[in-house]
Image (cartoon, rainbow, N blue to C red; front, top):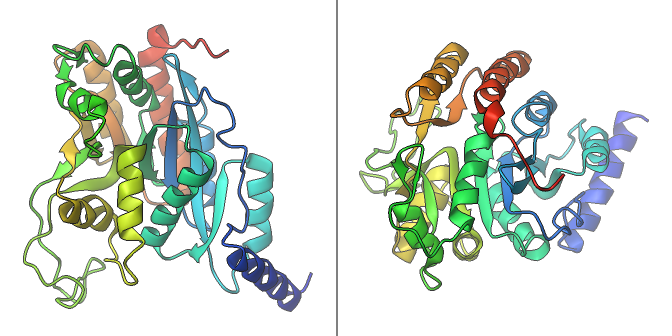
Length: 329
């Protein structure tokens, strides 16, 4: 197929999806099973097949852990003239875990909010969402353990701990039916907008006039319940020109409007080398007083990503081998 024909076909599919307010490609059966406890939203880009495949073969490869069943959903957007169009459609049809939106692929905020809107329509039966990006390594063992704790006798939340970390704040938010404020991650309490025009994090005074960002959850990953997620989505989709940094906007600016904040998950988020992440995992396995690693950021180079993830995953599986079980088969 010639480039011109491919571009024309992509444009026709795009316009058809747009007119019907539908994604380019999606799996409406993703949450048809009522035993899914957790959706992991992974913001990706159309060209990031290596990153997605690295996750599928490592931390996203075991959806049934600790009596909890999870489902990964990768989120990509549309780009006019993108040569990846056919590959993305085929990947979505083969893997059944890709949400190919009509939203601009460069708009991280747009992809995240429209992914949440899609969840409301097609995954309303799943209560808990964890959002991350495709360049992070997530300790899905620990994440499943946490969801297992939160869903087991939640009314008895006093003196509930996981790896010596109190879960009372999560339980309190989780069981309050009227709160709509279950948002937990790596809390960033104080940060300033970057005013250096040469920085890739540059923010103009027009985009954000205040001297400090509101408290927000780090982009590494954050946990929400469906009520909170739907509230943030409804508020965010009102903005025609939302603030461009998704973590600050979705977990800081929007909650500030709605009068709540991101709260801290009592586990370790680390940015560093693969060896540093592995050492944190190993040390926690022999020193129970250490807070376990929940998300790690390593290399941003796609060719190295699988090796990074595979090395961490191999160590993590060894550490958790005595706690790996599932009643889902």
